[in-house]
Length: 205
Image 1 (cartoon, rainbow, N blue to C red):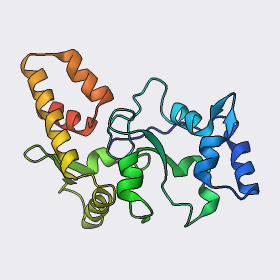
Image 2: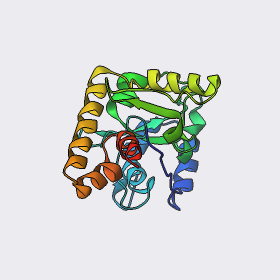
Image 3: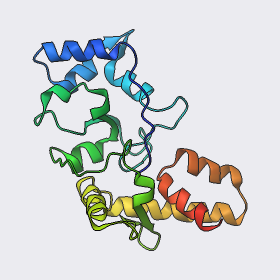
Image 4: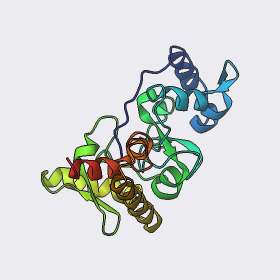
């Protein structure tokens, strides 16, 4: 999980949100089907939610969207719990299909970490031996419990994900051995799994 520097909604978004609140329409369908300047609301969201030029990664597992999975939009608080948040900009997160559907699905808790609000880069640690994520031990019990819950709900320690993080870790170390600064910066800037890059680079400073 990596910090999401959420950008403000585009000016027309509030109008679409009011429209959504006035009709009985599934939020997911509205995001895909409603358009502005021939682009769907989902496309606008993915283009605008991050700073311009930042890589399009899953807000939860930090895999690169379009490579590991198609781009989806997660309703952090599900619509079944509160339909009025179906178009709320701050309730929407860019997510891969696995995090959004395969793992989270309809599960939700107010204790889940929000990568645009919580200091996830400080609270989550990485074990290079098996690729697991775990709560940073220096924080209080309540914070560690929130990290564990988030890891579980989004399947962040699924076997394939642990293996992928270990591969990234090895690639970063190989790049460091040959002083491939361009490759190191690419991993740190675009990922996947930028948390791994940060921790490896920090260990060398």
